[in-house]
Length: 106
Image (cartoon, rainbow, N blue to C red; front, side):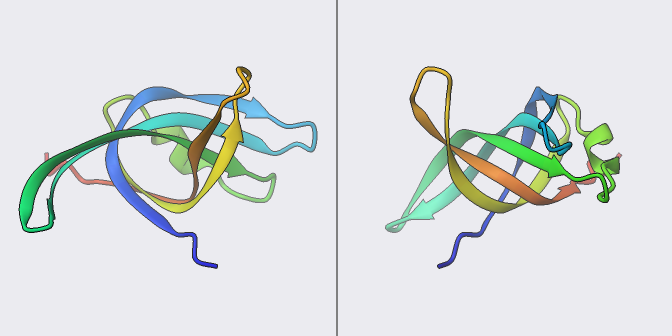
């Protein structure tokens, strides 16, 4: 089954670091996407905020997570999954497998 997502946007919530009992570090942040898309022959403004989780094992480098700050423009590649919040409601979350910083051209 296919489950791939690539989304570009701006980090709008500072990454929150958590460590699981098994020693895996998880960074959670929110990515805001804004663009113009064509649908059924019409142009429309598109906007969404998507929670992102980056999981880093002891063997994986976490250099990119140190550069993720509010206002940073990035592209995230990964898969989506459902997470249940403390309130019992499910939400869609993007699990990042690759994060690319977007060069601002400055």
